[in-house]
Image (cartoon, one colour):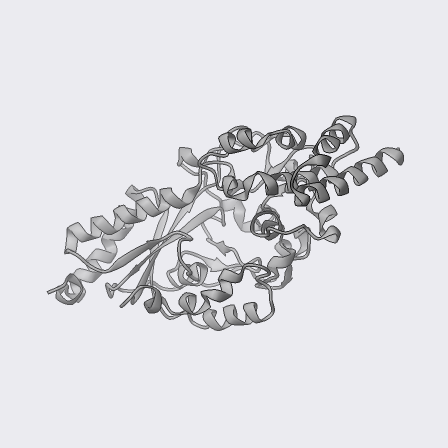
Length: 363
């Protein structure tokens, strides 16, 4: 007889209580359990797709039904165990707000300053499941950290980890929003936790500060306008009209979190792997633009930035340099890249060079 049929309700309740301690031992700050009812989030997701807000992220539409039907992804799944892990680093050289006002310095999303979180969290989730197995015997599960189509934020809200803010990021009352999410889909009918209620109120700070007005309405994000999408997900040329709005943001964008009032409660991570590496929290745009591909691959090993590739790294940095104050050194570096083999890079370098020369001429 399998564990899921033999285990009693009392044992399931006891197991749920044990999860909190086990999760903390593994470096997770919180764990919660929800059933697989998305409470309308599936329909809202379909409407988001219908508006085309996913842009070129075709995989979002291609796997839509799997996102909306957990048992189709993991047979017999009836619960989602959601966890969060803080990533706010404690060794930043410059505060994000100040960095955004330093046009010569590259802004990299805080989550990408250290090592990639995917493998780390998935391994810890696997350990959590194994700890559960040692307690009750084999059961069905799958550990997920952006590795399968999952509507993770609605499940995390249902599990009590926080609420989805107007910027569509999950917010926790005691910890803000600087954290990663991961899930265990399971066939164990654990008792579900109470869902979190929303506390954004009348605040619209995230909508007001968004550089490209990508938050088109409360709780609605048009990814096609989002700098995170433009600099990370998109493989195409960045729309010319949006380039000046990107400022020095070369990998992702944190503005909606930086200025969210709830992040005054954010917690510093205890994970050394999430601390800044290679000075990426305070690097000059020009220095990063001068990296050749070999240097790029070496300096981004183990980082989420590496999946970008050197070509799109140069694309993003060219836009940043085009927005920077006029500089002979920048102009020289841009001219050096005019013969780059990539048409994508050349296009953005040419645009950036025009901006620099116009700015120099206007002095």
